[in-house]
Amino acid sequence: MALKDKKHWSTKSEAAQDEVKDAIEEAVEWILIRRREASYAAAGLAAAALLGGLFLYQRRAAANAAWDKLSQAELYAYSGRPQDAQTLLTQVGSEGGSPAAAALARMLEGDLHYPRAEYDQSLAAYDKAVQDAPEALRPFAQADRVMALEAAGKAADCAVASQSFLDAYPDHVLSAQVHTALARCQLAQGQADVAKATLQRIALQYANTPWADWANARLQPAAPKK
Image 1 (tube, rainbow, N blue to C red):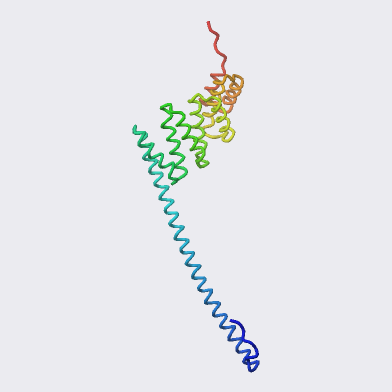
Image 2 (cartoon, rainbow, N blue to C red):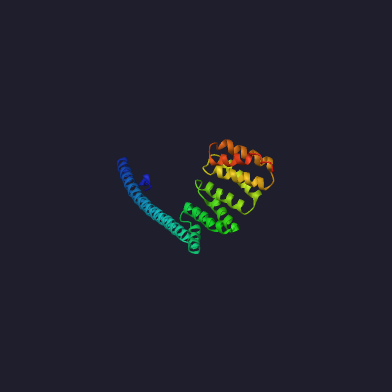
């Protein structure tokens, strides 16, 4: 409230009383306004919490649905029902319920095409998995892609993909497998010296393992023909 004009005050006492009264009224009004604002803020927070809870519930429900469909697709795949599996895998990959489930769905989709020598379709699925997978799953998708490139006879692309994997994940559990694919693809391109260096690295890096035995066997000079 605005203070009254002093010309309306008969004495300083009245002016003082009016000032006190106005100050009290202003304080009460301020408190009432702030209480209303506080109640609005509390209501807003409650609404935000409710919406947040609803969002989390829907997100969790979507994720659970994605994993359920992925599990069912795996059952179909291993039961000789690839078309039914493919239908569910497509849904998991497109609905966005869970990035991890979607990546695994695309990897399984690639696995369905691979044994039928449908390498273009297999590579397309693995490519999507590599692009969209969470970091923990990405190297598995990349390793699958390497194997598909090799099986498709794309030795140059396989060598590039293998080296990219090894640069990014030198100590991964799949590194030895990818390393051997790199050596085979180098040999397929006629790069004997480069392949020999790769085989020597495999023998040293994975000593006392079947991978080292495989590399050492190929490093042995060929027996002379009789």
